[in-house]
Length: 402
Image (cartoon, rainbow, N blue to C red):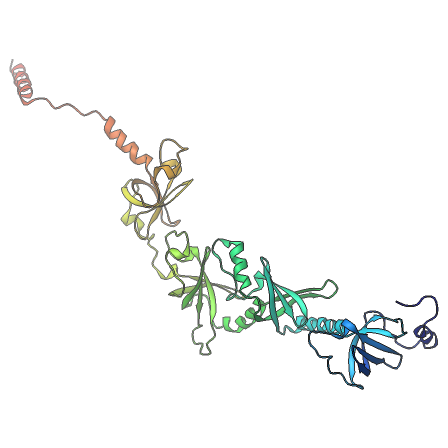
């Protein structure tokens, strides 16, 4: 600490040389090595005073200060203006960190990528070391090939996937940096997006692509493909949303697709680095002529695909699926659909509505039962014996004769 009981040598120098730029606490200085002995390095600070670096302040992870020679120019950070020996206390460790912060700030402007080593992982992302500083890479900033695609978004499974990166090195771009708060946020995705821009310019909406399914998620399938005419091996990745996989309703892409399967799709949208694909657009819409196969009032058999609290999803054929709403299952509106039928059951229904444009077909068990009830309740004339009929006809003839 600075001795307040008497005027220090540095203070006297300040009084006599107001024009000199004297370093302050935390400043980064450039000095000349005077001597290196044991665990101490003495430095001439611009002829103003002598600085000393000692103990833990000597060591940095880079090891760049381990072989200093007298006369060598070196950077250090001021940690105390005057120690017990009247020397300026300096640090290589802080100097190294400060220089790294300044260096990384320039990366934000230039967009230059830098190597990072993954130290640990949590549910939010990866803890990384960039040069000598610790930073954070959020899950959302991972490149698509590294993004943990986990069905159902299970947080523990996501964490397990992230932990696989611990110890590995990846290239990242600095997104946000704040030395005061020791905040360093990096992105792998930003590098990927930059690389994609030039390649994406080679494709356009409406093109047909052929690629391989790289992953399946609840919301769709990821397809990797090469742009038409690309010979440099560059690949792009697009998403086929679950609603664009097939014309019929599916619960999960894995119901009809498998990883590494080769598929064809049409590019239906490009938003920045995001590419949206459709597989069903390459197949004729079976709902165009649905009314040639089915009509309102028809009695049909269908296989229950799924039973939900609001009704039964039913497959009439490979392309056409319908819904029997809970209100159409029985006279009791509170009846639990799962008690009426379960997945795999073959049930008879009456078609009560067809909406081709909306891809909707309404089914009803209740309406089918009502038709059956009406048939039972309609009175049928009792057939008379042949002898009685003949006697009645004879009597009627005689009456007319008279």
